Length: 407
Image (cartoon, rainbow, N blue to C red; front, top):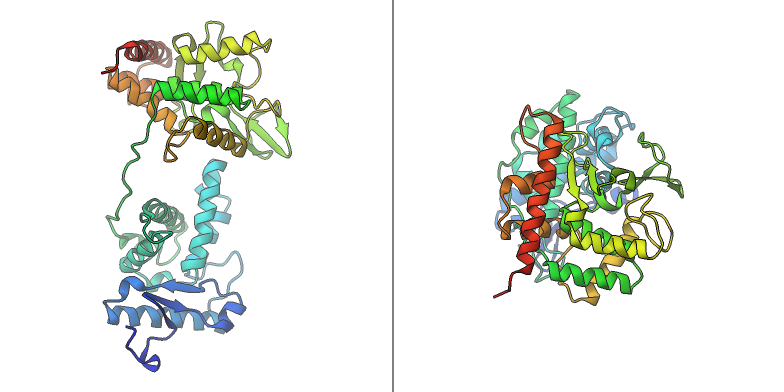
């Protein structure tokens, strides 16, 4: 491609080393055209397709400049940007039912796609374009690093969600475009990172040494209860969130588990945020069967602090942890005990279930402990007892496993 004379190149094509880029004109960029460039390097060996893509991008830019694609915020003009606007702004969109923690990455990907493909018309694109976009979004951040397959797959998932709502709204071209989406795109490998009970004990000790006793309790609960991070430390939500909360700070309200969710027998019952609007499955954990948790509780009581309010508190603020502060504590504790960088805090939950399976716990018991739903007509009261007994069996097998001599 580098030998082609500039006057014979497809419109808008620029060559930067081994990269082939279509670039919008300076006039279009100055007037706010959303697609500043498009990486077409994957078409280097297909000059016909390369020219076709460049001509299509060039035509869409010219139409935008002529005013044919301008729209008000409420208009649908057949571009992907208008699909994203509809999905994000319509009050009946499922976007508004997403948890705030899920909305944040969705907004990030919507911004990225508005820039990359927002001005593209839906009726002029097909599955080959989607594959091109996927290839571009999955390119390594730096030379020699792995492809960003998780990023690309997430972008496609958000794209599908936005298009699905546009279909509900009977927007032209969207159903046909969904029908031509590639059925198989490369997936990232499953995460295999986990930690042992010994490593969790070291993490807890490190958390105490850096003055984060609340984080130490959280690690114990996440690991021994196989509980998600936000179901232990809770989340800070906008005041507009309809759920009740007595804890407000800096224009946010806190939603999460408190000691009122633990009865006098130290049985913790909680409906995970991931299931509260779907299966409604509740986790039931006997804290007395969790030695790490009990060690943390004894230290709390020994310090003269009552078991009241939120389960986990940031000692510095006296309030539940904010996400950034909790992540900061995790990084510091992990660095202190030489845990691999690839291990995330959320891996504590998976590590707990992994230890349970290695200890011989049944899949059914592990499912109950983790709050995974099953289809059944059994009453909630029977489920509650069954889940509690399942946790006790799982906990007993894990304790016995830790006590076995390691070969």
